[in-house]
Amino acid sequence: MKNVWRRLPLVAVLSFTVTPALAVEFAMYPASMCERWSSAESPPELHNSEARNPSTAWSLGLDCPIIRPTLSTSYTLNGYITFTDSHPSARTPVCSLISWARNHGGTTTALSRPCVQVRRTGHLLDMTASVPSTAITRRSHVFFSVLLHPSFTSGLGSRVVNYESAFLAPVH
Image 1 (cartoon, rainbow, N blue to C red):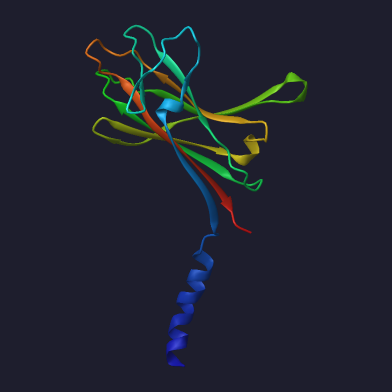
Image 2 (tube, rainbow, N blue to C red):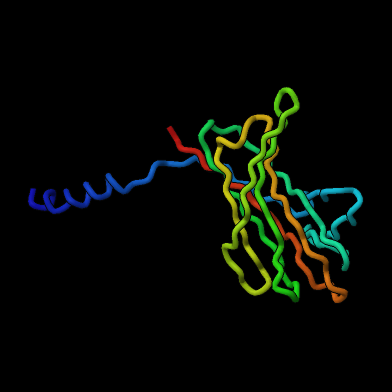
């Protein structure tokens, strides 16, 4: 009986600090799934499913689609994207996570969240962004929008390595 009273405060603390269970739908995509913004741009150079800007003069815009699972109506999308950034300048790739939809009547709704740097290890650069479920409808297209700066003649530049999505939904 004496031991029960010692553990009671621990049980009380744990009952208030336990987080709710989450269902997670996770996917990883190769950069070769990314599409260029315009057919007027040079296509990305693909090597081991990494996408690189082959141009030494122009930036390359890429849209990297994310496939949405059918989850509950209340979830958050956490997106992660990894670059190889060997660009000699301090310019890092520009990135946003976007939810875009064309509604009835032709109107469009969009939400854009800029990517923020999470980690840099040598030439690897990890960035992330999140979008709440309120910005994603069943008509929404969800994607990373990326701008890769021109490469240098030596081939140094930025590449998209891969990107990931994690849909987090509370379990009821």
